[in-house]
Image 1: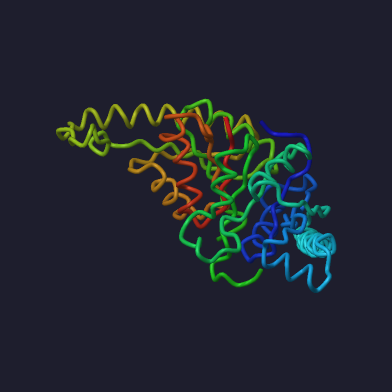
Image 2: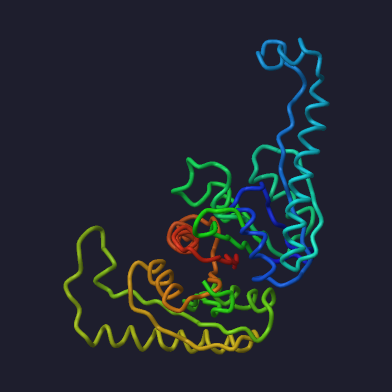
Length: 160
Length: 147
């Protein structure tokens, strides 16, 4: 099942994700795109949790951290959009708070935007997963009903 | 890898493979060069509960080759109908994913397109895993299309 919306490109700023953006337009053509960056919000403060205790002590409320996390995610997504534009794809940025898992958040965004295809890099940020098909791309491959483009990292692992 | 290398369309005659070719036609720019690849496995490569089959005669291999060629021709028609400038190849090999990855490398494919069932019980274990294995092992972009 392919949607009628734009291409949804999951982008975490990694070399693999940059390659995914650079190749997506080349491969899929210009359907318009959304560059999605997922960020992890922190919940309400839990006094028993050491990090929360420290945050409370220095007086920075979690909402402020969440705003900062969202701002950084949006910046990352905007960086992805500039790279998409350089590859000839008209893209708009989207920052989404993590819900359950990165995979769930990507799938939900694909539903919300009725994506005609989903693009992921085969390797994400975690070097420990270098030997596996990135856990995110493998899980999206199993779960999505939409066409999924899996892009391998650049050969030398260097930034694109 | 050349960005203008052919698109490799994996075709095994299943509805999922049909859906993949049709979807590739919708997603990709028209008129692109494509290679329809049909892989068939020699019978002796398929284990039956761990017991290897007795070697099979050349007539069986010939029969399987002919069947694979028929499947490839069907895929070729679908690819042309989907707007590709296509040719077909038949490959003998096992496991299937390895042959696909190998052909993609030999022909410097710019993209591999493969259909998948997704997660549906035993079908997933058998067939969905070819798409996942190709995405895992290939150094080339892979478009997985859910049938």
